Length: 254
Image 1 (cartoon, helix red, strand yellow):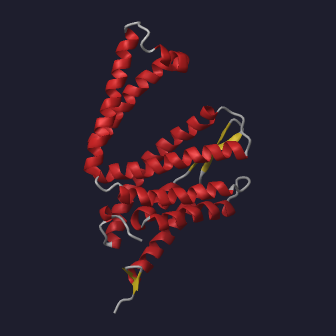
Image 2 (cartoon, one colour):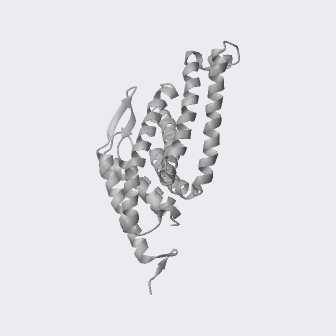
Image 3 (cartoon, one colour):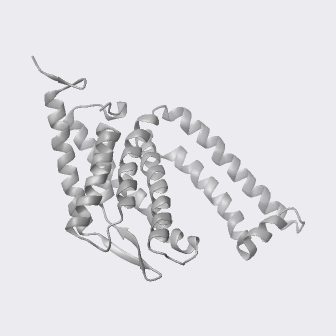
């Protein structure tokens, strides 16, 4: 008789540990090869493929595995290649980010209902942007508050609203369910972690730059990295799914 471990067979538990260990090792190797970019004299961005490999266990096996891999990759990665003082708060956000990926993947299950809701939201944003453009072109005072708040950048903000709404609608319509689920899982967790890390770095390192100056390049990097991670993670998940022989769409319960 096969022994059970938290509701799963010992064979599957061992298999999970092996797969998790392999992707943790790959993430550590990728972290060693990362590119560091400085912003205002401070090490503000790290570009690497580590996130691709650390994401897989979280999606396959759930938030506990995701948190463990996130913590190990950040902690062991620092020991292997220290790039400055160790900041424990960043390790905690790495752990939280790994857990979030596992939680989000399992939570975003009814993707069709979510797609409909997001279509309505992005359509509303697009319409609001178009209305702002019309009001701005009429020369009235209806959008004066935008210029008061954003100054000369107000027009860029208005067009940015329209473009964001249109791109959001296109993404919802064009992306397949599995890919769309990955985008939300990696994108939301990455956005939260990047924001928290930016605040932590600015306070711990005493960075005097305006928040937007330090945050914007990191945000752009996160968006680009998310797109790359989704593109790379999709075929990897398909291969691992065949090896693991488990329907990934059901998420993990461990």
